[in-house]
Image (cartoon, rainbow, N blue to C red; front, top):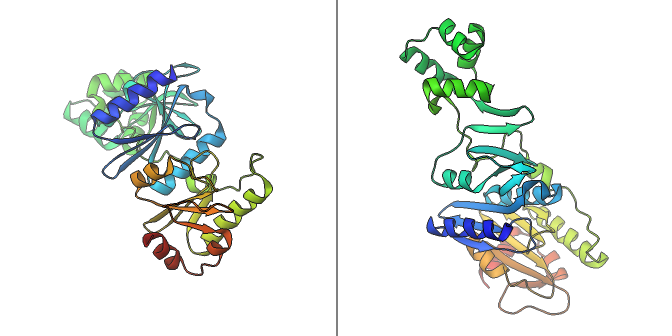
Length: 305
C-alpha cells in the first residue's frame, strides 16, 4: 500500500516538473524541488505510525533547507477525508487527493484538530459578503444558529468555527469567507528549530563516533553556523550559515545518496573520516576540521575542492 502511494506521489510530482529524490530508511521518503520550492514528504499508509523522533527530525531538516514538510497518507487510524488537513506531531497530514489539489493551488479550509473539524473565518471577507448580499446581523445569526454578537465577533476576528457552521456559511457566501490552509507554510504554534535541536543520544553509535559527531556539531556552532546532529538522514550533521549549507558525514564509507541529494539542495558535502579518505569529495580528519578558526576558511576549502 505504501509503495503504491509513494509511486503515485512521485509520478504526480514529476508531471508537475519537480525534480525528485527518493530515500530509504530516513525520516522523509521524498525530497522534491521545483525552482525555489522544496518539499520533504513522508509517505505512509497510516500517519499514526510515524514516531515523534522521526517527525521532529523531519521538521528540523526542513527548517535548515527552507522546505515544506508534509505527511501524505491513506489514513490516521481512520481514512483521511478529501480536502481536510490533519496534523501529526505538528506536521501537516493529508491524503493524496488533497495533496494534488494543494500543488495545483487549490487549498482546503477545513482542519481536524482536538476540537474536531473546524474552519478559520476571514472576518473582513465575511462582513463584505454579508453586506453585499443584504444580510443583517440578526438575519445571519438566525441562519447560522448563533447570536448577532457572535457574528460581530466572527467579523472582527479570524475565528474558528465548527464544521456545521462552516458549511452553513459556505452555502451562503462560498469558500471565499474562509482562510485557506497553506500546507506549504509553517504550522501555527510550531517552533521547529528550537524543538528539533535537542541533543540526541543513540545507542547505535559507538562511543567514539558519537563523540566525534557531537564535537563537530559543536565546532560548527563555534564557527558561527546553526548546526544539529541527525540520525534518520543520509548525513550526520546539517549546518547552515547565511546561504551556505553543509551536509556532513562522519564515516569512512560515503553514502551513495549524498551526491544527488546535495546537488538538489545546492549544498556542500563534507566527510570526516577516521582511517580511509574518501575520493572525489571534500574530506578531512577530525583534527583538520577542528583546526579551522574561521567559517570563511572552511567555506573556501569546500568551494575550492
